[in-house]
Image (cartoon, rainbow, N blue to C red):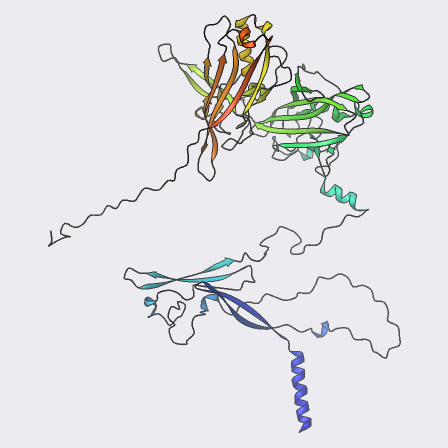
Length: 619
């Protein structure tokens, strides 16, 4: 009897050792009113045991006297699968947590299938929502609700769908060729640093002598967004920029249609680099010829110098008059001072809708560098402007509303033809002509130290939206002998050469939409009859408002007025015994937005007609 019991126990132990069952639980989240209840559903599955070909290696015998032999490292193999996602055995729509009594309808249990007759008397659903496991990326969800019919009874409305789980991180899709395997990135070492540096920075730190072969040229003639622009010698148009450090990298190409602004520094030794370092000379940035397109027979577009400004040691700036082909090479004035060094470079590239380069202009700022400065700081900018059908081009200052700090968009209207003499003396306006030259845009006189109104070049700055400014110049009374001539000269100085006549109401107003442009109103207030009447001040008053919705208002200019004040007494009295007279110019932005008022929809009207005997027999 004892032997048979021992054999039976051995059989039970053998079965327990060879059977390995894992249990996986599933959570069902259920909403009961304001409470969340989780229901667990269990599923059993068996983990497959190793076959005879996957048996483990034998354990060395404890009685063996031979020393253990070194084993060779096994090749790297993928890790075995650790498990699988089980398939639920129960669908969500068949689960009813509130069904507590079998074959009996539970009150307000909307998912109870035996409540077909009592359902019309339900007042609410005790279980509104049943969802699947919260451990998956998405799961099935069933919602229950009641609707009151026209007869006053309840009618069940059930809906089922799939809902994503936002509480866990799930990778929905990826474009990596290696699939789900994400190896760690290679760590740089002494031997691999140079190769990794070239691999990840080939575009920014490419070779300066890079040449573009004909095979790289595409069939399309124009450039595409982000493509490098070619030079006449089949090189690449480069624009220095800062890289990992603040030092300038001269081999950085400029991408087509990608506006860039960068500030970088250079370590300069004046006696060695003043006249020999190419990045310090303006010829490096002006003696460039670009190809209009990518074809081999593309036209050559030279870079035109539109402005050269000389900055003194103290920081004051003066515009220089340089003829075509002129040059100001850097010069070492003394061992501690180098002149005519490039401080700022700004390119403006005008292109056609087909992607061809039409014109390239550059503005430079030259200055002085002293030995006391450890590094030389340079600024580089490039801007792309598309030309319109009329040949003009303007910069946008917002989309659509103006942005604070951006210049006003200005232009001049063009007339197609005048009407006959017998008609009203007006002209038919067809469009607006803009200009790339900043001297032809709406600008303000820029104050400078001892700036004379009639002598020397006057510095100007564009008028920036929502930025009030005041500036001026000095008029010598000895220069006001010819009053009529001085009056016109002062007006030209205050308004600027070729002043625009219209301003865009929005920052992106189109040139072919004349109704979106506002004329500059003139309000000249001449003084009393004097022997000499000259303008003493010019003031621009710009009124703007917030246009559109409260959530995203857009700044719009609604009016612009020019106010010119002249003298009411003689110039000698105004100068108070001095030999000079101050002439001022200013601009002010005045918000005229009306206070926002809450708006309501109109009350709906009910067109109801009662039958003629509705109050019978009372009436």
